[in-house]
Structure formats: structure tokens, C-alpha cells
Amino acid sequence: MNMKLGLKQKRFFKKYGFLLIPNILSSDEIKLLNVDSKFLLKNESQTLYKKDKNSKITKLINWNTSSNNEKFSLIARDERFVNIAKTILDHKTIYVYSHKITLKEPLSGGGWEWHQDFGYWHNNGCLQPNMLSIYLAIDKATKQNGCLQIYESSHKLGRLDHERINDQTCLSKHYLKEISSKFKHRYVELNSGDAFVFDCNLIHSSSDNTSTDRRVGFIVSYNTKENSPMYNKRNYGNYEMLRKTNFKKLSNII
Ligand SMILES: O=C(O)CCC(=O)C(=O)O
Image 1 (tube, rainbow, N blue to C red):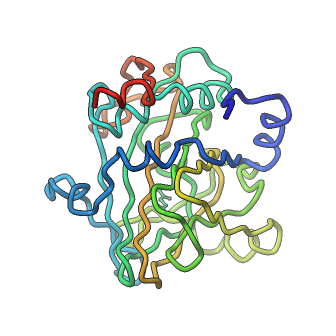
Image 2 (image 1 turned 90 degrees about the vertical axis):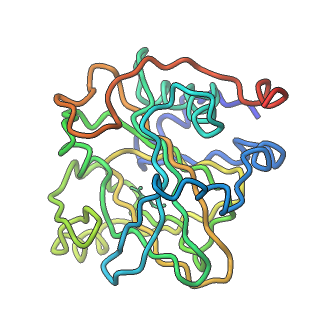
């Protein structure tokens, strides 16, 4: 499919804070990513275990750089993803701020509490909320296995206060009642290969996995060069030049 965004899609994103892109990757490309859990978690030392408020664990594999030939770094720099981010951020010089796998094991995987990504990215030294993420469904994402949930248009609130609960940066609780009465709640159910693009201030969460299916998603986030962190607080997220790739072509040689 043509990944060039038109005016209609840009307007939709501005209004609602998200965009759905079905089939950004084909099933053959998803297969090539070798998403067997054992493979994904091969380097256990790189895996972070994030407890939700009920102390259930969701797993996270985070890369510190996208300048390598690791398959997920190639996807993060794939022209289909980068062109979408560039068009929405409306900026010539963008870069991969972070890219990570989030993995919820069947029946036991924990959730992500309500938050805005800019809630913690701002604490990492980024000043402008001109950042976004693309969630790629590697496994089908359903209500039962803990798909993303959002409040449509909530990005328009700007950055709200957050607090740390267990291992997560969460939206302060007192906002939630008001937000749930004013904004439309939506479950983001996706098929494997679909992408969900969302604004860094869109309020989102995901529940724990109550199903017998695993839920793996790949999340790549983009920033503009001029908005790179004021200080090197984290070992990811700092500016590095982005060299676009074409995963489809390259996958013949992977
Ligand atoms: O994987 C998920 O369900 C959500 C992850 C998320 O919200 C985050 O990494 O900020």
C-alpha cells in the first residue's frame, strides 16, 4: 500500500491524535523478524521487567541505537515508517528516539498504566511535544491480550502531571475521572502487521494479558533533531543521524 500520507490523514491525526495504518508490514516481513519469544529474549540482560500497579510484569527490550543492522533497527529506519513520521512531525531532520519490544506473556503479562509518553520524555530533557510513536502489531492485539487503549483527542490537553508507581510513570490519578467523562475511550485492536501512529501527548494504557495468546508489539518513536534532549540523562534518545532503509529489499539478504 502507498504509505504517503494525504492531507485528510494529516488532519485526522491533528484532530484525534492517532492514525491507523493497516498492513504496514506483510506477513512475510513479520515472519522474517523471527518473533519467537525465546529469540526475542535471548539476551536476558537487555530485557527490562516493568511492574504495573498490581506488580504484574510486562517485558521490555530496548535498543540504545538504531545505527546497526539488527532487524528491528532496520524496521525503525524503514522508509515506510520514517516517511509517516516525517510527514506528521513536518520536519526535515528527524531521528529514531527509541525503539523497543513490549512483550506480554500469556495469562501473566502485566499492563501499562495510563500515561502520555511526553510525560516522561520531557523529564528526559525534550522540551517540545513534537514527537510521536508507531506501534507495530507483531502479534494480533486484542482486548483480551492487552491491546493499547486510548482517549481520542486527549493529546490536545498538553502534557499533564505524572507520578511514579512501581516501575512506571503514570498519569496522576486525579485526572482520570474527568478525562474519562470528556474523551472517547477506544480499544486499539490490531492485526499482525498493522501500525498505530500516535502523538506523544495522547493518553494511553494497556491492560494485563488475560488470554492464552502472547502479545508482542514493536514501538518506534521519533523526534526532531532540534528537540533532542538538553542533557544526556538516558543512554537512548540522544540525536543520531538517521539513514533510511528499505526492509523489503534488504530482507533478501538478511
Ligand atoms: O506495549 C504497550 O501496551 C504500551 C507501551 C507503552 O505505553 C509505552 O512503552 O510507553
